[in-house]
Picture 1 (tube, rainbow, N blue to C red):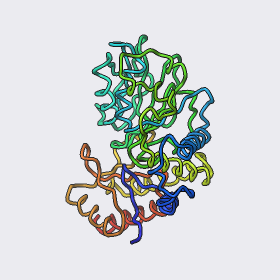
Picture 2 (tube, helix red, strand yellow; picture 1 turned 90 degrees about the horizontal axis):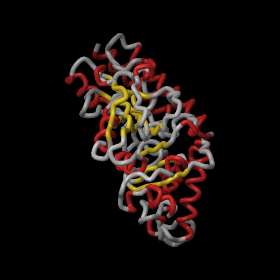
Picture 3 (cartoon, helix red, strand yellow; picture 1 turned 30 degrees about the vertical axis):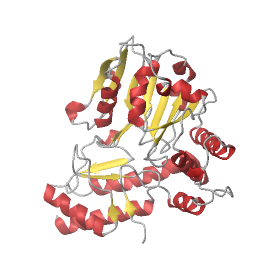
Length: 361
């Protein structure tokens, strides 16, 4: 069976080369006589896999040497709950910028532990933009400022890192990590669930400045202590070894393709191609996001009515284009253009959209 053009928002497409390598190594990893997921996480073979994955991630993102990298079970939502427990005192103020649905979810996770303050919100615009920096109201006593770098549902993305002084900036980069170059040193912490650009679901990555790790935080069990995970080389408990191994393969694959700079150029072309089809459709397709805030990873768009959108999805699927149904929060259509989505797949979608509009307009 041939693989289809997969635009799923997550779990998302993985590079075919990575899947084929995993397939080849599935029964016997490097002569061990067992699958990588059957090896002890305490054994040298897997410890080497984990260490190499961290080295490759550091190289891809040019992570400063003093920053810690931790791989954890679960996803971004779990880390969101750990942020106030680890980096804020009980009841301390924390600032959150709301640019979409996942920013709202981050607030929900923090509220039981801290005094959550909304620095700015784009909810009034239907999350079609990012509030101007001049509109942000930051608390002098806040433990940190949290942003969602890319909102997968609303298709809103920061074009660059906000320029802030004396602010511990924490960013959820679940859907944008490794898609473009970033200056890690401008963040106190970056975290990401894996199932967009890193690998399969079940594992998450955090990159943390040492000053943030030095904070006492709040009373918590050792398993909820990010510092404890780091002291045990991300193996405080049994990690999701297969997901970690696959993430390592993805990192290798990205390095072979020229690193983040090369993939950034490809991602820019993919997004530009799809947005040009939308913008040139004379209103047949509509994207509601302010152009300067448009996401390169998630492109939501809408047709005139539900009947037309249902027809679009049905015909798209029959043409091998899957994963296009919009999130239930907003509806419509959504094409996710993560790193593993090829330019050929984007061109197939673009041509289908042009043809569909010509037939239905």
